[in-house]
Length: 270
Image 1 (cartoon, one colour):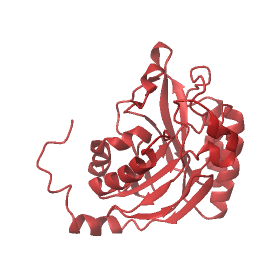
Image 2 (image 1 turned 45 degrees about the vertical axis):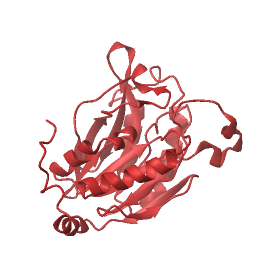
Image 3 (image 1 turned 45 degrees about the horizontal axis):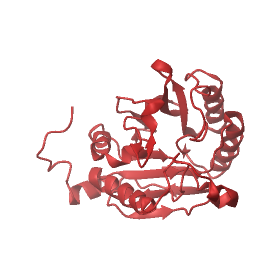
C-alpha cells in the first residue's frame, strides 16, 4: 500500500487551509498514493479560538474534504474540530474516501507542558479503525502516542498500520521524545506507524520563531516506522511530503519473531 504523509503548516483560516490540502491531494494522487494523511489541526492551527470554527461532520469543511477525496480517489485522513457539549469542541480525525467514512475523536488530551487542551476540547472515548482495500488501519492523534494501550487496541482490532496525525509542541527534548515515542509505539504493537506532524512554522516563516505561545504548532519530523521499531523514512522540520510503499506482510513476520502481543500476561484495558 502506498501512503503519503503531508507535512504542512496550517493557519487560522479553514478555507485557506483547504487550498493547501487540495494541492497536496492532487500531488499525492499523481504519485499513485492510496492513503493521504494530513496533520492534526489541518482545519485550523492551535492558538486559534476553536469553538467559532468547529463544524459538524456534514458541514462545509468536511464536505469539501470528502469531495476532494472523491475527485482524487484517495482515502484522506485530516484533523479538524467538531462541536461538543458545553461550548467545547472535539479534536477529530476525519477519514474519508472510496469505501471509507469514519471519524475519531482524540481520547488523550494534551494537558502537559503548560498547555491545557481540555479547557476547550472534550475527550473522545472510542477506539476507531478503518479498512482500506482489506487492510485494517488504526487512528490516533498526537498526545495519544504516550499511551501504548491505544496502539495495542489497534492491533487487537486487526490493524497492521496506525496513522498518527499530530501538531507536536516545541521545547527542550520534545523532538527526541517524539522520535522515541513513535518508534516505541510501533514496536509495542508490532505494526507500522505513520506519524505526520505539522511542519515547524519557523521553517517556512523565520519570523514565527520569535512567537511566544504554549500552543503546540508543530516541529515537523514526520516519519514512517516499521513494525520492528526502525525508522524507514523521515522528513525534516519544514513542509514536505513523504511517500512510501508499505509492505504490510512484514507485520506477520515481525509478530512471529517478537510475539509481544501473544505473550502479554496482564489484562488489557476494557
